[in-house]
Image 1 (cartoon, helix red, strand yellow):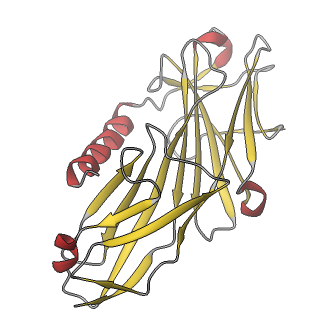
Image 2 (cartoon, rainbow, N blue to C red; image 1 turned 60 degrees about the vertical axis):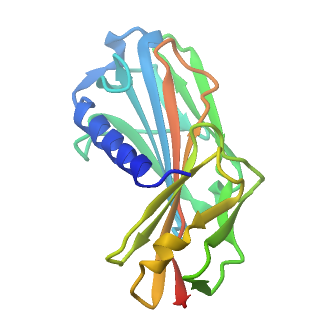
Amino acid sequence: MNKHALHLLAIISIFSFTACSSNEIGESKDVAADKIYQGYSIRYSEGEKEVTLRAQYRFAGKNGTTLVLSKPSYIAFDYVRLEVDSSDGSGAYYATRRDTGLMLGAKHSFVFAGIDKKEYENSFMLNIFKLENVPAEASRKKPLVLTYTFEPGYQLQKDDYIEVSSSGTDSSFNYTFSSKDTPDQLLVPVTDLKKQKGKTLTLDITLYRNVAMQQVTSEGGAMEIKYALKPVTLTLTD
């Protein structure tokens, strides 16, 4: 378990990625199909009616020029082809939103076909992430331990992590839990609980998963899942 250092590193990484990524737009017909980088993201917040999915293709690596897929190239999610967009200023991308009830706890896939008609299929399972038996109260005199589960069952992998942070407090904290920590448990130490001056404590908990790609070009790719739980509020006792 690592505290502020890992959180700071994550923030720096995000800003560095944003700052260095190209927003220029090219066409995939001008690039060898095997030199296209595949990027996929899945975003969900507990309670929302839809899951947001996004695919983006680049030339010259993960920060390179974004690409519009030239026919006969295409991208399909669960075998439904997606249309290109560029409305948010991040270059060319392909996005869709799907009903949460159909997405959670099931296997899904992106299929990318290059201009050479070769297909690359990459699948993922959107496991339901949730807390178990959340207490109504937390004592300032002992560590707060929260238990989480996945359905279907899943264990954090090497590059996965869960971020737990406080909100609405002048004594904030942030912890990151990875596969190296106690499985299925999130722990807030007494030291941070004692610093809380309010009568309640609100926690934001988010899962970050890096899904292993099954079929990639020589340029590689990445698939990321961000799954945020509803904020958890507990009454603090002495």
